Length: 293
Ligand SMILES: NC(=O)c1ccc[n+]([C@@H]2O[C@H](COP(=O)([O-])OP(=O)(O)OC[C@H]3O[C@@H](n4cnc5c(N)ncnc54)[C@H](OP(=O)(O)O)[C@@H]3O)[C@@H](O)[C@H]2O)c1
Image 1 (cartoon, rainbow, N blue to C red):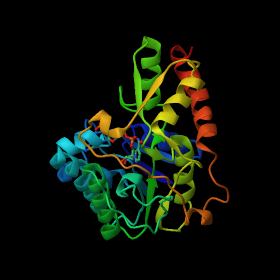
Image 2 (cartoon, protein in one colour):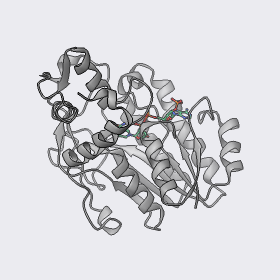
Image 3 (tube, protein in one colour):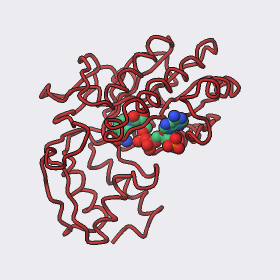
Image 4 (tube, rainbow, N blue to C red):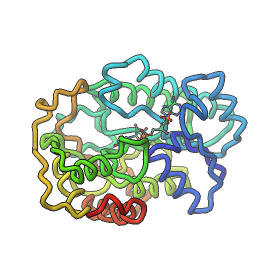
Protein backbone atom coordinates (compact mmCIF):
# COMPACT_ATOMS: atom_id res chain seq x y z
CA UNK A 1 0.00 0.00 0.00
CA UNK A 2 1.13 3.59 -0.63
CA UNK A 3 0.97 5.19 2.84
CA UNK A 4 1.60 8.80 3.81
CA UNK A 5 2.84 9.34 7.38
CA UNK A 6 2.58 12.83 8.91
CA UNK A 7 4.85 13.70 11.84
CA UNK A 8 7.42 11.31 10.39
CA UNK A 9 10.29 13.13 12.10
CA UNK A 10 8.59 12.62 15.46
CA UNK A 11 9.24 9.84 17.96
CA UNK A 12 6.16 7.79 17.05
CA UNK A 13 5.90 8.77 13.37
CA UNK A 14 9.48 7.60 12.74
CA UNK A 15 8.73 4.14 14.11
CA UNK A 16 5.40 3.92 12.28
CA UNK A 17 7.13 4.74 8.97
CA UNK A 18 9.89 2.23 9.70
CA UNK A 19 7.49 -0.60 10.62
CA UNK A 20 5.34 0.06 7.53
CA UNK A 21 8.42 -0.06 5.29
CA UNK A 22 9.61 -3.28 6.90
CA UNK A 23 6.23 -4.79 6.01
CA UNK A 24 6.74 -3.85 2.37
CA UNK A 25 4.62 -0.70 2.14
CA UNK A 26 5.61 2.30 0.05
CA UNK A 27 5.95 5.10 2.64
CA UNK A 28 5.79 8.84 1.98
CA UNK A 29 7.15 10.81 4.93
CA UNK A 30 5.82 14.28 5.79
CA UNK A 31 8.51 15.22 8.28
CA UNK A 32 7.25 18.36 9.95
CA UNK A 33 6.30 22.01 9.57
CA UNK A 34 9.43 22.92 7.62
CA UNK A 35 8.48 20.24 5.08
CA UNK A 36 4.67 20.66 4.89
CA UNK A 37 2.87 22.82 7.46
CA UNK A 38 -0.41 21.02 8.07
CA UNK A 39 -1.98 24.17 9.57
CA UNK A 40 -1.82 25.83 6.18
CA UNK A 41 -4.70 24.43 4.12
CA UNK A 42 -3.42 26.01 0.90
CA UNK A 43 -0.13 24.11 1.27
CA UNK A 44 -1.15 20.93 3.06
CA UNK A 45 -4.22 19.83 1.09
CA UNK A 46 -2.61 19.93 -2.39
CA UNK A 47 0.62 18.38 -1.06
CA UNK A 48 -1.30 15.42 0.41
CA UNK A 49 -3.47 14.96 -2.68
CA UNK A 50 -0.45 15.12 -5.01
CA UNK A 51 1.15 12.29 -3.03
CA UNK A 52 -1.89 10.12 -3.93
CA UNK A 53 -1.75 7.88 -0.84
CA UNK A 54 -4.02 4.86 -0.39
CA UNK A 55 -3.78 5.41 3.35
CA UNK A 56 -2.70 8.21 5.68
CA UNK A 57 -1.29 7.77 9.18
CA UNK A 58 -1.67 11.15 10.85
CA UNK A 59 0.83 11.24 13.71
CA UNK A 60 1.76 14.94 13.59
CA UNK A 61 0.79 17.01 16.61
CA UNK A 62 2.05 19.35 19.26
CA UNK A 63 2.36 17.10 22.29
CA UNK A 64 3.99 19.47 24.77
CA UNK A 65 1.25 19.74 27.38
CA UNK A 66 2.62 22.90 28.99
CA UNK A 67 3.17 24.73 25.71
CA UNK A 68 -0.39 23.87 24.66
CA UNK A 69 -1.64 25.36 27.91
CA UNK A 70 0.26 28.64 27.48
CA UNK A 71 -0.30 28.93 23.68
CA UNK A 72 -3.82 27.52 23.26
CA UNK A 73 -4.58 29.11 19.88
CA UNK A 74 -1.44 27.66 18.32
CA UNK A 75 -2.22 24.33 19.99
CA UNK A 76 -5.69 24.21 18.39
CA UNK A 77 -4.17 25.27 15.05
CA UNK A 78 -1.56 22.49 15.08
CA UNK A 79 -3.65 19.69 16.55
CA UNK A 80 -7.26 20.37 15.51
CA UNK A 81 -7.02 22.57 12.40
CA UNK A 82 -4.01 20.59 11.14
CA UNK A 83 -6.08 17.42 11.50
CA UNK A 84 -9.04 19.00 9.73
CA UNK A 85 -6.79 19.85 6.77
CA UNK A 86 -5.47 16.29 6.60
CA UNK A 87 -9.04 14.95 6.68
CA UNK A 88 -10.19 17.44 4.03
CA UNK A 89 -7.36 16.21 1.81
CA UNK A 90 -8.42 12.60 2.47
CA UNK A 91 -12.03 13.20 1.42
CA UNK A 92 -12.54 12.40 -2.22
CA UNK A 93 -9.41 10.20 -2.33
CA UNK A 94 -11.18 7.20 -0.78
CA UNK A 95 -8.19 6.44 1.42
CA UNK A 96 -8.06 4.87 4.85
CA UNK A 97 -6.96 7.12 7.71
CA UNK A 98 -5.27 6.23 10.97
CA UNK A 99 -5.37 9.15 13.36
CA UNK A 100 -3.09 9.01 16.39
CA UNK A 101 -4.77 10.22 19.56
CA UNK A 102 -4.04 10.06 23.27
CA UNK A 103 -5.09 9.06 26.78
CA UNK A 104 -5.21 12.82 27.49
CA UNK A 105 -8.81 12.87 26.23
CA UNK A 106 -9.75 11.37 29.65
CA UNK A 107 -9.86 13.16 32.99
CA UNK A 108 -8.06 10.46 34.98
CA UNK A 109 -10.75 10.28 37.66
CA UNK A 110 -12.35 6.94 36.75
CA UNK A 111 -10.14 4.86 39.05
CA UNK A 112 -10.10 1.81 36.76
CA UNK A 113 -8.61 1.41 33.26
CA UNK A 114 -10.20 3.39 30.42
CA UNK A 115 -11.66 1.49 27.45
CA UNK A 116 -12.86 2.75 24.09
CA UNK A 117 -16.46 3.34 25.23
CA UNK A 118 -15.58 5.55 28.20
CA UNK A 119 -16.58 9.18 27.80
CA UNK A 120 -13.75 11.64 27.14
CA UNK A 121 -13.44 14.65 29.42
CA UNK A 122 -10.09 16.41 28.91
CA UNK A 123 -8.62 18.45 31.77
CA UNK A 124 -5.98 20.38 29.81
CA UNK A 125 -5.71 22.26 26.51
CA UNK A 126 -3.68 19.48 24.91
CA UNK A 127 -6.47 16.99 25.67
CA UNK A 128 -9.09 19.42 24.34
CA UNK A 129 -7.18 19.88 21.08
CA UNK A 130 -6.75 16.14 20.62
CA UNK A 131 -10.44 15.49 21.32
CA UNK A 132 -11.34 18.21 18.81
CA UNK A 133 -9.03 16.47 16.32
CA UNK A 134 -10.79 13.13 16.89
CA UNK A 135 -14.10 14.84 16.14
CA UNK A 136 -12.71 16.28 12.89
CA UNK A 137 -11.67 12.77 11.85
CA UNK A 138 -15.09 11.30 12.66
CA UNK A 139 -16.96 14.03 10.82
CA UNK A 140 -14.92 13.98 7.57
CA UNK A 141 -13.64 10.45 6.94
CA UNK A 142 -15.72 7.29 7.04
CA UNK A 143 -12.86 4.78 6.73
CA UNK A 144 -10.97 5.83 9.84
CA UNK A 145 -9.15 4.29 12.77
CA UNK A 146 -8.61 6.47 15.82
CA UNK A 147 -5.70 4.96 17.74
CA UNK A 148 -5.36 6.30 21.28
CA UNK A 149 -1.93 5.69 22.78
CA UNK A 150 -0.67 6.49 26.30
CA UNK A 151 2.72 7.69 27.55
CA UNK A 152 5.09 6.60 24.77
CA UNK A 153 8.64 5.35 25.19
CA UNK A 154 10.71 5.34 22.03
CA UNK A 155 14.04 6.01 20.41
CA UNK A 156 13.87 9.20 18.39
CA UNK A 157 11.93 12.43 18.21
CA UNK A 158 12.94 16.09 18.48
CA UNK A 159 16.17 16.83 20.39
CA UNK A 160 15.53 17.32 24.10
CA UNK A 161 12.08 15.74 24.02
CA UNK A 162 12.86 12.03 24.37
CA UNK A 163 12.10 10.89 27.93
CA UNK A 164 14.64 8.05 27.92
CA UNK A 165 17.48 10.24 26.60
CA UNK A 166 16.61 13.12 28.96
CA UNK A 167 16.50 10.84 32.01
CA UNK A 168 19.77 9.04 31.23
CA UNK A 169 21.60 12.27 30.37
CA UNK A 170 20.66 13.74 33.74
CA UNK A 171 21.97 10.64 35.52
CA UNK A 172 25.25 10.82 33.57
CA UNK A 173 25.75 14.45 34.57
CA UNK A 174 24.85 13.66 38.19
CA UNK A 175 21.88 16.07 38.04
CA UNK A 176 18.88 15.64 40.28
CA UNK A 177 16.06 13.65 38.66
CA UNK A 178 12.53 14.24 39.85
CA UNK A 179 9.47 12.37 38.64
CA UNK A 180 5.80 12.44 39.56
CA UNK A 181 4.66 9.45 41.56
CA UNK A 182 0.97 10.41 41.32
CA UNK A 183 0.59 10.22 37.52
CA UNK A 184 -0.12 6.61 36.66
CA UNK A 185 -0.45 5.50 33.04
CA UNK A 186 0.23 2.59 30.67
CA UNK A 187 3.78 3.22 29.41
CA UNK A 188 4.07 1.88 25.87
CA UNK A 189 6.89 1.17 23.43
CA UNK A 190 6.36 3.12 20.19
CA UNK A 191 7.41 0.17 18.05
CA UNK A 192 4.83 -2.16 19.60
CA UNK A 193 2.10 0.44 19.03
CA UNK A 194 3.37 0.97 15.44
CA UNK A 195 3.00 -2.76 14.77
CA UNK A 196 -0.69 -2.55 15.77
CA UNK A 197 -1.16 0.48 13.49
CA UNK A 198 0.23 -1.60 10.61
CA UNK A 199 -2.08 -4.48 11.46
CA UNK A 200 -5.16 -2.25 11.69
CA UNK A 201 -4.42 -0.82 8.25
CA UNK A 202 -4.77 -4.30 6.79
CA UNK A 203 -8.36 -4.55 8.04
CA UNK A 204 -11.69 -2.85 7.46
CA UNK A 205 -12.48 -2.85 11.17
CA UNK A 206 -12.83 0.93 11.44
CA UNK A 207 -13.37 2.76 14.72
CA UNK A 208 -11.58 3.79 17.90
CA UNK A 209 -8.88 1.63 19.49
CA UNK A 210 -6.82 1.82 22.66
CA UNK A 211 -3.30 0.53 22.03
CA UNK A 212 -0.89 0.02 24.94
CA UNK A 213 1.51 -2.34 26.59
CA UNK A 214 0.12 -4.27 29.56
CA UNK A 215 0.50 -3.11 33.16
CA UNK A 216 0.70 0.31 34.68
CA UNK A 217 3.34 2.58 36.16
CA UNK A 218 3.89 6.10 37.42
CA UNK A 219 6.32 8.57 35.88
CA UNK A 220 8.58 7.73 38.82
CA UNK A 221 8.38 3.96 38.11
CA UNK A 222 9.32 4.65 34.48
CA UNK A 223 12.34 6.82 35.39
CA UNK A 224 13.64 4.22 37.88
CA UNK A 225 13.28 1.43 35.31
CA UNK A 226 15.01 3.47 32.57
CA UNK A 227 18.00 4.10 34.84
CA UNK A 228 18.19 0.47 35.95
CA UNK A 229 18.22 -0.71 32.34
CA UNK A 230 20.76 1.94 31.30
CA UNK A 231 23.18 0.81 34.00
CA UNK A 232 22.62 3.55 36.58
CA UNK A 233 20.84 1.55 39.31
CA UNK A 234 22.11 3.79 42.09
CA UNK A 235 20.99 7.08 40.50
CA UNK A 236 18.33 8.57 42.73
CA UNK A 237 14.98 9.61 41.33
CA UNK A 238 13.15 11.86 43.78
CA UNK A 239 9.44 11.04 43.80
CA UNK A 240 7.30 14.18 43.84
CA UNK A 241 3.62 15.04 43.71
CA UNK A 242 2.55 16.62 40.40
CA UNK A 243 1.50 19.78 42.24
CA UNK A 244 5.10 20.23 43.42
CA UNK A 245 6.29 20.48 39.80
CA UNK A 246 4.08 23.58 39.24
CA UNK A 247 3.59 22.91 35.54
CA UNK A 248 1.15 25.09 33.55
CA UNK A 249 -0.84 22.11 32.21
CA UNK A 250 -2.86 19.97 34.67
CA UNK A 251 -1.99 16.25 34.57
CA UNK A 252 -4.34 13.30 35.04
CA UNK A 253 -3.84 11.09 38.08
CA UNK A 254 -4.76 7.70 36.63
CA UNK A 255 -5.05 7.07 32.89
CA UNK A 256 -4.30 3.38 32.64
CA UNK A 257 -5.77 2.06 29.40
CA UNK A 258 -7.36 -1.17 28.34
CA UNK A 259 -9.04 -2.28 25.14
CA UNK A 260 -12.34 -3.92 24.40
CA UNK A 261 -12.06 -3.50 20.62
CA UNK A 262 -8.52 -4.56 19.83
CA UNK A 263 -9.18 -8.24 20.49
CA UNK A 264 -10.68 -8.48 16.98
CA UNK A 265 -7.36 -7.38 15.48
CA UNK A 266 -4.60 -8.59 17.81
CA UNK A 267 -5.08 -12.05 19.24
CA UNK A 268 -2.58 -11.40 22.05
CA UNK A 269 -2.11 -8.57 24.52
CA UNK A 270 1.01 -6.49 24.02
CA UNK A 271 3.77 -7.43 26.51
CA UNK A 272 4.09 -5.80 29.92
CA UNK A 273 5.59 -2.31 29.72
CA UNK A 274 8.75 -3.27 31.65
CA UNK A 275 9.56 -6.01 29.12
CA UNK A 276 8.72 -3.58 26.31
CA UNK A 277 11.01 -0.91 27.77
CA UNK A 278 13.79 -3.45 28.08
CA UNK A 279 13.38 -4.27 24.37
CA UNK A 280 13.44 -0.55 23.51
CA UNK A 281 16.56 0.03 25.63
CA UNK A 282 18.42 -2.77 23.81
CA UNK A 283 17.85 -0.94 20.51
CA UNK A 284 18.79 2.37 22.19
CA UNK A 285 22.07 0.76 23.38
CA UNK A 286 22.93 -0.08 19.76
CA UNK A 287 22.05 3.39 18.47
CA UNK A 288 23.29 5.52 21.37
CA UNK A 289 25.96 3.44 23.18
CA UNK A 290 27.38 6.59 24.81
CA UNK A 291 24.28 6.84 27.01
CA UNK A 292 24.88 3.52 28.72
CA UNK A 293 27.03 2.98 31.78
N1 LIG B 1 4.80 10.99 23.07
C1 LIG B 1 3.81 10.58 23.84
O1 LIG B 1 4.00 10.21 25.01
C2 LIG B 1 2.40 10.53 23.27
C3 LIG B 1 1.38 10.06 24.12
C4 LIG B 1 0.08 9.98 23.62
C5 LIG B 1 -0.19 10.37 22.32
N2 LIG B 1 0.81 10.85 21.53
C6 LIG B 1 0.47 11.25 20.16
O2 LIG B 1 1.31 10.56 19.26
C7 LIG B 1 1.54 11.38 18.10
C8 LIG B 1 3.02 11.47 17.84
O3 LIG B 1 3.65 12.03 18.98
P1 LIG B 1 5.23 12.04 19.14
O4 LIG B 1 5.54 11.64 20.51
O5 LIG B 1 5.87 11.32 18.02
O6 LIG B 1 5.50 13.60 19.00
P2 LIG B 1 6.81 14.36 18.53
O7 LIG B 1 8.01 13.48 18.69
O8 LIG B 1 6.77 15.68 19.21
O9 LIG B 1 6.58 14.57 16.96
C9 LIG B 1 5.53 15.35 16.47
C10 LIG B 1 5.66 15.46 14.98
O10 LIG B 1 4.59 16.28 14.47
C11 LIG B 1 5.15 17.27 13.59
N3 LIG B 1 4.26 18.44 13.56
C12 LIG B 1 3.76 19.14 14.59
N4 LIG B 1 2.98 20.15 14.14
C13 LIG B 1 3.00 20.08 12.78
C14 LIG B 1 2.42 20.85 11.74
N5 LIG B 1 1.66 21.92 11.99
N6 LIG B 1 2.65 20.48 10.45
C15 LIG B 1 3.44 19.42 10.16
N7 LIG B 1 4.01 18.65 11.10
C16 LIG B 1 3.81 18.98 12.41
C17 LIG B 1 6.53 17.53 14.20
O11 LIG B 1 7.41 18.14 13.28
P3 LIG B 1 7.93 19.67 13.49
O12 LIG B 1 8.09 19.91 14.96
O13 LIG B 1 9.22 19.68 12.72
O14 LIG B 1 6.90 20.51 12.87
C18 LIG B 1 6.95 16.10 14.50
O15 LIG B 1 7.37 15.44 13.31
C19 LIG B 1 0.84 12.72 18.38
O16 LIG B 1 -0.41 12.71 17.76
C20 LIG B 1 0.68 12.73 19.90
O17 LIG B 1 -0.44 13.49 20.27
C21 LIG B 1 2.10 10.93 21.98
